[in-house]
Length: 164
Image (cartoon, rainbow, N blue to C red; front, side, top):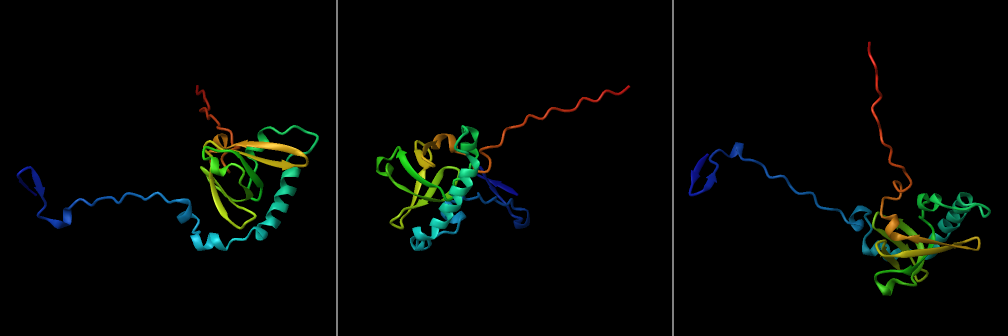
């Protein structure tokens, strides 16, 4: 190694420090391997059986005679028929469809017109109707991975062992 005019010149190429490549953040499109052509080929009719299954799932989760509280937050919404009632982007208000994918920051759904749309959870409110009751979901409160939303954070304390 020789120093020339405030620059370091490595003469031995074997000991040259290697640069670490920065990890690229994967987008939802790359992560799920859905191209624009794949999304265009999706049909609303193919997701209707999923919606029927979700209705059975949710009716078992929330009996009509009991109040529902944390179960709304813990529920899985893949297959739910949601409507956007409030959003930061006013063009998205009134859109409705069956949820095909829920990520940490977005809800992706397919509309009756076979259009695949992505709605950000930030600043959005979603509603759905089940057994004559209207439920509202606040997207700001759902900004976590769906499988982690319902888990309580446990504080682990060390077990004290007394030795004599």
